[in-house]
Image (cartoon, rainbow, N blue to C red; front, side, top):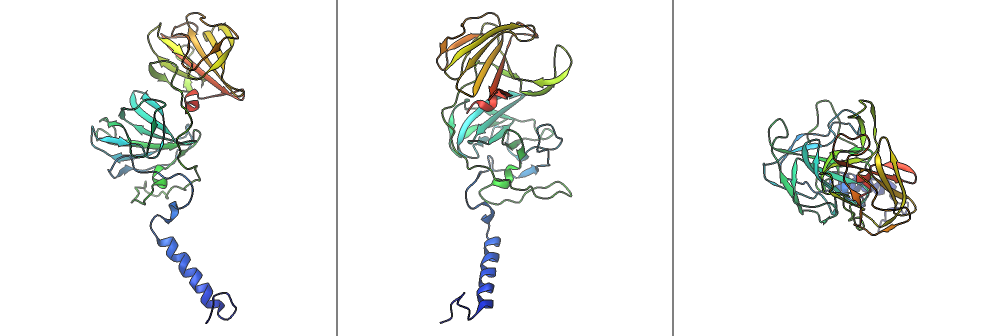
Length: 310
């Protein structure tokens, strides 16, 4: 009997290996085998606009895909995770889900879930709101690791016909971690509308383009402000820009701050349990109205506080 690799028929062995490799390459879904992120489509409709570069939050391009969907139709979680955000961004209702290092985003969606809520793949997150895609109902579906954007269609569990802009190439499938439900999630510090996210913007008071070093929540003055996690008050100061501001250390690497408060209600050294009141919404400092400016630092570097919520 002739055995592959025993030296009697090397050409036959090589041909068998090459044939096996070719079959593997042709099998549908082969590119998605093995560890890593795997997604299910959040709606059943086909793509009407594909991912068009724009991998950075500041670069031009279509940083996601538009999928045809019926107004009022359900939008389902693409993978297991925890709701990172459910609210309004730039006037559009949106939901994002953290999958343990990467997030999927869904817009415009009227949410039926709350931040911090654990979801499984296929769970309903909300319902499509009309008005996107030049008046035609569709869902804008995005994928980000917090720094760069990725094409979610490249991570589908089953291959689909993918819409590509004229002259473009299919998106590379960067290695992303497998979806998982992160540990216990916190909740935003105040019940209110997210009015200005973390990132570059023109300051509404000074008119200067600069980094908006936190997340703003619009809420009536007097609305309670609560810490998402247990911690210790390490600083309480008053400044021209931030007004009354309280800093809370939660662990060796994470500090959060709460600005534009009307007064101090806590003292330095005071321990706060998760959900404890740290103050109330005000409008002190450079402020155009009642709101909370929420800040966060990781290892002494300022970060997007919404990215800290798990």
